[in-house]
Amino acid sequence: MSERLKDKVALITGAAQGLGKEMARSMISEGAEVFISDINQDQLDETVTELSCSGISLDVTKSEDWEKAVAHIKDKSGSLNILVNNAGIGNGGDIESTDMDTWRLVHNVNLDSVFLGCKYSLPLMRDSGNGSIINISSMSGIVASHNTSAYNSSKAAVRHLSKSIALHCAKSTNLVRCNSIHPVFTRTAMVQSMIDAAPERDIEQKLIQQIPIRKLAEPIDIANAAIFLASDESSFITGTELLIDGGLSAT
Image (cartoon, rainbow, N blue to C red; front, side, top):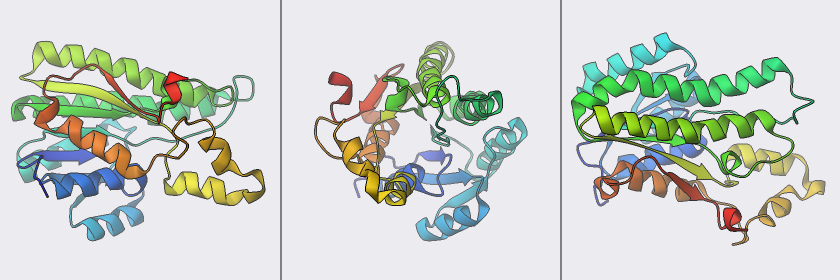
């Protein structure tokens, strides 16, 4: 443990499993006090016990939940230095097959939650001094596909919203930074279940074939990037996107 995040307080959404859980584990190992949140209470309780951290039940699409979460952190720790907006959902469908309810749901969870998280966390982050907002987008926000129109749109919007927030923070805080992370296909439980559900389709190899370095990303690859952006090592980096794509965007 190098304690790159010593004396920092972090909130990570959607952290009961997958990328959020791995980021929480890594930040704890680097000395941060970590609050994890999720809408799935059972999984949240299990992860809180496993990681020995604090948990907050949070529906990221509800303003009142965000207000309660930030108030709780302020009451318990007095500060907030790191916000990771990680909660999100995926959904298939091209522009013709996607219905309006699906479109709204995907944008509500993937995009509106980032807006709300930054809006309600910034006052405490400002008071806490130097801080870092990390919004988890996707390579799908950079390189589009034909059959995930709502997901592509929501993740691209997260990228541009992050830039707007970064500029606002540069003018109004001392100093909170904001950046987005864009992972390629990553070996999470969700992706693995998709691979395992249809072995005859050889989905894993089809995904790997799109990545120049010929392997899926691992959750720790994204967690390592988040650690860097959360730490003081990245103190001059704001308003940018970090692509963790194995070279996909270079093709």
